[in-house]
Length: 340
Image (cartoon, rainbow, N blue to C red; front, side, top):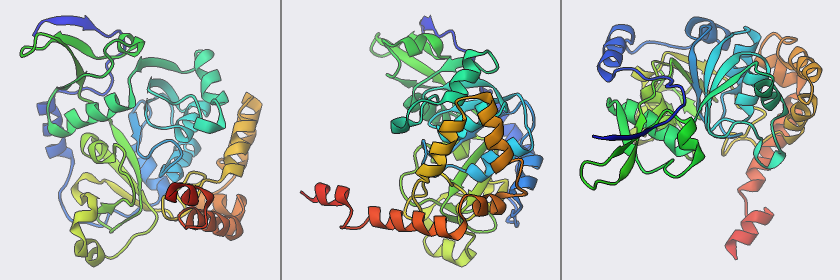
C-alpha cells in the first residue's frame, strides 16, 4: 500500500502481535485460581513506574476510582496514560503528578461540569506532555486491533481533521478503492484497570449497562486488574454465562470494592456524588488546593473504606443509591419527558 500521510504523534503501546502473543503465553496463567487481593497489593504488584496505563469506564461512569486513589497513594511516577474516555480518573492522575505522558482524546474537561483545572495546568506547565491525540472511536479500534492480533486496523476516522496530524495513524491508498484510508496501529497497554458490577474469585466478570470499550481493552492489555462491587459465587456466574464479558484467564487481580467507583456513577447502583466532584474541581484550581485534597482524601486515609467514611459514610451512600433508583423510576422528570 502506498503511504499518503503519517501522523506526527508518538506511537504508544504498539507491539508486534506475535511478540505480544509470546509474552502472554509466557506470563499469563490459565489456572483457575483465587485472584482476590487488596487494592494496595494489586497496584504494588502489577503497576510499575513508567508503565503504560489504560482505564475502563467512561467519563464519570463505572470508573475504578479505588485503584486510581491507590496509584496516587503509592506515588507511582512517569506513567503514560491512554486518556480516553477518562475524565475524573485522568484529572486526578495527571494533577497528582503520577502521569508524565498522555495520548488524549478528551481528558481535559469534566463534561457539563466544566474544564479540568488540574490536568490543564499540569500540561500547560510542561510537567505532563500530550504526545499524541486520537478520537474515542480511534482508541477503541486500536484496542480492537490488539484484541484481534493484527498490527493495525483500517478505519475512516480522523481523515480531514487536525487530530490526524497529532495522531500516530498512517493514511494509505486503499488497494481496493484507491481512496485514502486511515490505518490505526494496535495498542497493548501494560496494565488496564476496569471496574465491574460483579465477578467471582477467579475474575469472571459481568458488567451491567454499556460496555464502552472494556471488552476490547480487557483483551488487549498485558495485565488486567479488576475492581468489583461484589464477589459472587462461581455458580451464579455460570448460571448466566452470556453475561460474562471478561473471562478469568484475562484477569491478574480481583479487588472487591463496594462503591469502588465513587464519586463517579455505578449504573443501577449509585449516582454521581456531585458535591464531592465539585470539591475537587474547586480545590484543583491551584496546586495548593490539589495538595489539600490529596492529603485529606488519599494520603490522609488508610484505605478506601476510611475514605468512604470521610465523604459521608452510609448516610451519603444511601442518598446516592436513592438518587440512582429515582433516576430509573417513572417519577423522575427525565423519565416522564421520555415517555412523551
